[in-house]
Length: 170
Image (cartoon, rainbow, N blue to C red; front, side, top):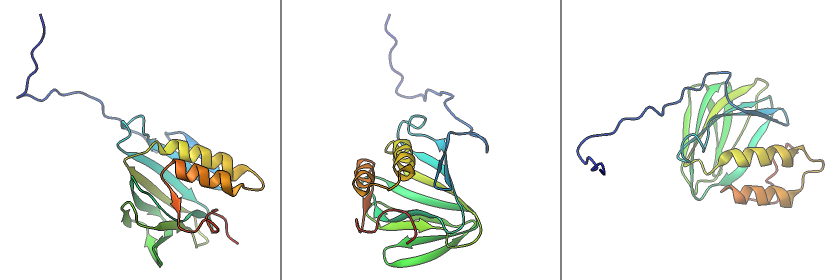
C-alpha cells in the first residue's frame, strides 16, 4: 500500500554536522592555509565555509568578483585588509564583511601578525575544487597566468585586471 504524503506535518531528519576546530581537510598554499569546514557536498552546494590563515604580508586574492555567489568574510584574529572597489578597509577581529555578487573585492594581510578568518560562499559553487586547483597552480614555478585565469573563471571568479591577478606582492 502506498503511503500518502502528509502536507500538514514536517518530516524531521537529523542531518546536522558539527565540525570541531581541528577538523576539516587542509591545504597549504604559499604559506597560507585553507581548511574546509562546511563543504559543497555536505551542504548540497548551498553553503561553503572555509577557515583561512594568512601569514604576515600574504595576499589572499587580488581584486575580483563573482557572478553567481556571495562571499562573507568573518575576521577571527588579526587585522585583514579588504578591498571593495577602489577603497581599502581595515577589518579587525570580529568584523563581518558581506560582499554580494558583482562586487569587486580582494583581501590581504598587510600586517606583521597572522590573520585568521572564515570565508563563507553562498551558494558554495563547489569551491573546494577552486582551492585544490589554486594549490596546484600557485605551487608551480613560474605561475602560468593562463592556467590561473582558467581556474578562476571555472569557479565563478573574474579578475578585475588580468594583468594584475596573481596573489603575490611585487
